[in-house]
Image 1 (spheres, rainbow, N blue to C red):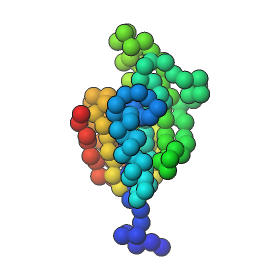
Image 2 (cartoon, rainbow, N blue to C red; image 1 turned 135 degrees about the horizontal axis):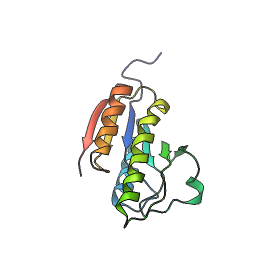
Image 3 (tube, one colour; image 1 turned 135 degrees about the vertical axis):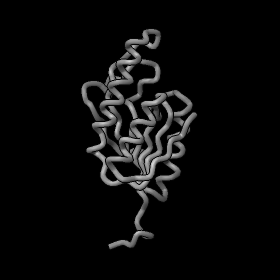
Length: 144
């Protein structure tokens, strides 16, 4: 059995947007996740690519899409497509993200650190806090 010092830390990053989305935060957290994955077990909890409102065909029809990309475990959350000019549609998509992210807790084991991004406002922090309560990790809330 590995000692506490030999065990790789487990980090979950909660960010609504992640590569291949075009939002700057998506690329920033991709770089961070892939860098940290060299020394840690990194999981990213994010929405399917949806920054522009459209959902790519490959990401339609399921609640969760799990994969491994460049050493990072991915849990992508299915959200409905929306028109960015319609607030109700955007809010509906954000609520799908929130509820399904909370549901994704069951896909995570014990975590050492939860890093949540303030995108979407309030929801990002709530999801991070929820994961902290469910997985036992330390909680870092990164406000942009």
